[in-house]
Amino acid sequence: MKLFPVLVMLTACAARPQDLSGKMFTFPLESNTAHVRLNASRLDFSSLTLCHRSFTDLKRDHVLFSLATPVHSNDFLIFWDYTNKEIEPHIKNRKAEFGGRDYKPNMWHSICTTWDSESGLVQIWFNGLPSIRKFVSTGTNIVGPVIIILGQEQDSYGGGFDINQSFIGMISDVHMWDYTMSSCEIQNYSDELSFTLGNVLNWNALDFQITGRVLIEDKQRIC
Ligand SMILES: *[C@@H]1O[C@H](CO)[C@@H](O)[C@H](O)[C@H]1NC(C)=O
Ligand SMILES: *[C@@H]1O[C@H](CO)[C@@H](O)[C@H](O)[C@H]1NC(C)=O
Ligand SMILES: *[C@@H]1O[C@H](CO)[C@@H](O)[C@H](O)[C@H]1NC(C)=O
Image 1 (cartoon, rainbow, N blue to C red):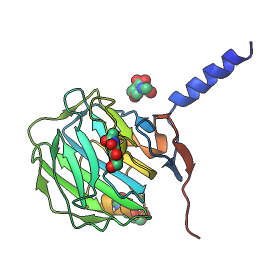
Image 2 (cartoon, helix red, strand yellow; image 1 turned 90 degrees about the vertical axis):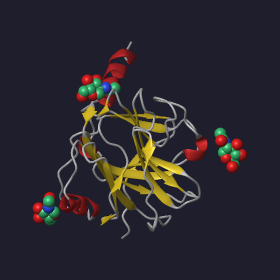
Image 3 (cartoon, protein in one colour; image 1 turned 135 degrees about the vertical axis):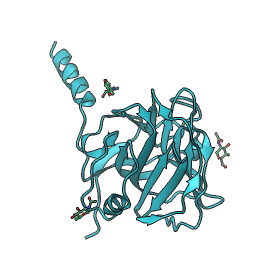
Image 4 (spheres, helix red, strand yellow; image 1 turned 60 degrees about the vertical axis):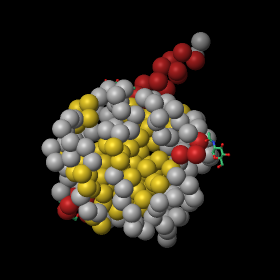
C-alpha cells in the first residue's frame, strides 16, 4: 500500500532537471546498451555550439556525443576515429575530419564544436585551441524531434548501437547552445572559468534518463 506514493515521487524526481555541477557520468562497462538520453529544450537549430569534457583510455573508435533526427542518424555526432587519429564532427550525415590533436588517454579533454548553417562551417576547439574552419553542410537547419545520447552511437533514430563504438570512461559538463559561441566564452569553458550556461542542454539543469550501467559520481580532482 505504501509503494504507490513512493513510485510516484521517484518518477517526478527523474523528470525534473538536475544540477550536475561537480559531477560526471561514469560509463564503466563496455556494452551496446548503457547510455544516457538527454532532453533538449529546443528543437530547431540554424547554428550550434556543443561543449563537453571526457576522459577515457579506449584504444578504438568511440562516440562522444550522438544527436539523431528521423531524417539523419548523424545529424550532430562527435566521434573519435582511432585509426586515423581524428576528431570527426558529423553534421547532417556529413563528416569533417580534424587530425593533429593530442587526444591523450587518461586525462580530461574539453572539446567544443561550432557549426552554422549559413556558412556551413564547422570548427572544433580542443582543450581551448581552435582548429581550422571547414565546410561541412549548409542551407538547412537541424530540426527536431531530436534524440540525444551519450555513451552509444545511433546508427538509427534512437537505436542501432554498436558495442565497438561505445564510450567507456567519464563525461562531464555537457552544454549546448543554439548559436555559435564567441572564442572568449569557449576559452573560458575550457579553462573552467565563468561562461554562459547552455540554452539547449545545460549541465547545471539537465533533463536526462539513464539506461543500464551508468553512474553519476563526483568529479574527482587531483589533490
Ligand atoms: C523534454 O522537455 C520537454 C520540453 O522542455 C518536455 O515537455 C518533455 O516532457 C521532456 N521529456 C522528457 C522525457 O523529460
Ligand atoms: C567488435 O569488435 C570485435 C573485435 O574486433 C569483433 O570480434 C566483433 O565482431 C565486433 N562486434 C561488432 C558487433 O561489430
Ligand atoms: C571569462 O571568465 C572571466 C573570469 O571568470 C570573466 O571575468 C569574463 O567575464 C569571462 N568572459 C566571458 C566572455 O564570459
